[in-house]
Image (cartoon, rainbow, N blue to C red):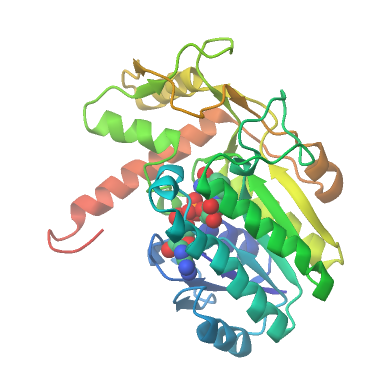
Length: 332
Ligand SMILES: NC(=O)c1ccc[n+]([C@@H]2O[C@H](COP(=O)([O-])OP(=O)(O)OC[C@H]3O[C@@H](n4cnc5c(N)ncnc54)[C@H](O)[C@@H]3O)[C@@H](O)[C@H]2O)c1
């Protein structure tokens, strides 16, 4: 089956496209390249790239007419919590209007399967050891709220026949290959790399949490595993699954100090942190319950923190070499 992948030139999206193609599925990418990179789609000659916004309804209509697909994997959107606090309307525009535009186009074109990139940010500050899909969703940022509204629009679309898989990713890290890495510096692992490159000590926000080593505990999941979860969700939809909401994590927590230690081992650098105060609204522990996705979709992440950090570091160095080779007046 062929899938329209919105945001397919982004970090997670490109891994999804590569996983779909490797599994024998077809793909068409729609990406406005606001944060994406065409280079991530290198080596995929059979995958058309349409450059434009998912909010451009006329374009979506045309894309679905010219490239008939059996379903959509919707990853296009903005993902930075702090930016969403500073500019909430941009987030409601890109993330909520993006979903609404897509759903309108799908209904018009008779496309009834969607896999959606949601986020653990929908939970807010979970009070349980492992947060499960049926636990309360009380997002504490505009970003988290836009993801939850997107989920509601998708789930309510069951009335016109839509089957939707909402995948709530936890902390995505790693790279499937060097050219696919996370170039943003909002997630922990690239933030630490950036500090090391700039000769700064990484900052640990909050060393007095109620966790074994005092630093926050998160569920890190390899981006290649996340891509496999999309493949499992897409195949389930193709097989007639009615859709659902699923956590995508490892089900195990790693503390920020543990991550720093592994980054130190992989890079050979000193990663002892500068300790700063807790960030407001930063929970002590956010770890996924992963039983539902294992039972329903047969998906289990492989989850090895060292392989996430090592592959992320390889991609980070690759990108630094690429940027150094560019002429000074050419944007990276
Ligand atoms: N990376 C994470 O840790 C993480 C965690 C939870 C959820 N998510 C979600 O997964 C999705 C992908 O995340 P990512 O890490 O790959 O981010 P990314 O920024 O690398 O990718 C997003 C892609 O969408 C494109 N895009 C943005 N707005 C668009 C629009 N209006 N029309 C078309 N294309 C548009 C960008 O150019 C980019 O290629 C996002 O929706 C994000 O909220 C990511």
